[in-house]
Image 1: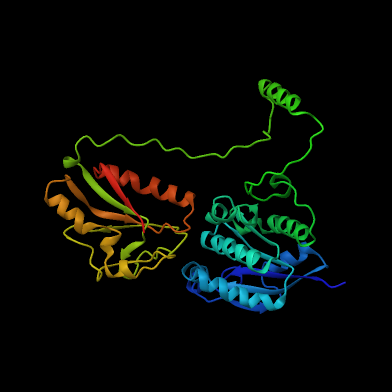
Image 2: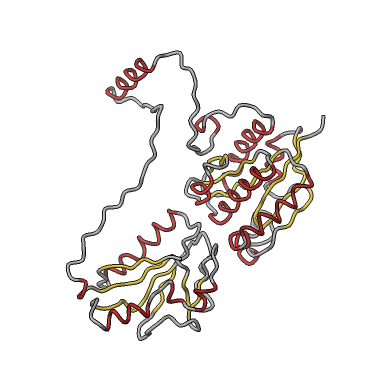
Length: 349
């Protein structure tokens, strides 16, 4: 009996090519398994074979979405795989987004099962959980020995056309898909039983979970905008030329604070954007399109605001995890408050 053929997708780090210095590598395919592919092969068993491994740099995929997808599909099609596995990416945001994107493309264009694995805060989860099955992992590669068997278990079911059970049973993130089934106990009895258990303080699990939305209380309105101190904060990736803080083009893990005192506008000789995922040509010519310093200086001169803060805060928004974004805010907001900033103009791309 012929073995089922598996294609495995890895980024430059997990493939052992290198770290950030190799994040721009173009996709390539190599025969057989590499790195984590050994754990995948062991978990799948003798009836499966990792016939090839696709490797692509995180930055390259983020900055060349359409081309990366097209090239990778052309690479793997001749292998006629029965299954495609990406990652797991754990908490690596750019890697997770790439895993989700290529899984969706393979599933739609080649009509074969796909599986990936990520930590709950990976931006790839929110972006692709409704499109593909993503096994929930912990936040680091230390969880490889636990997460890969879960990925393999689900992958085997999908490759064999077996029934995939609920997210709670299989370990993948909920996809918003509800399936009808017949329960031996009528709904009214189950509802009363649930209520009684809740009254007793016992653990209960609802049959109809609702989404959880983060709520942020709006700040109070500024009493007098003409006396207010305003600051710029941007997720548009505007940085000094050369990107001294090495802020990533997507899935940012850092932010920067940059001075603008004495400047009437954002000069293209002094500032650039590192934001991936869109055409940056216009912003590279005129950074004021993202940080409208020129317009705010006019408003400031006319007395429309009290004054503009002498610096701005910048990171990239594409693919950046909510965990990191929250951490950035918790870090720089106290500085804004200490500097007497009354309000922020938040800009993006």
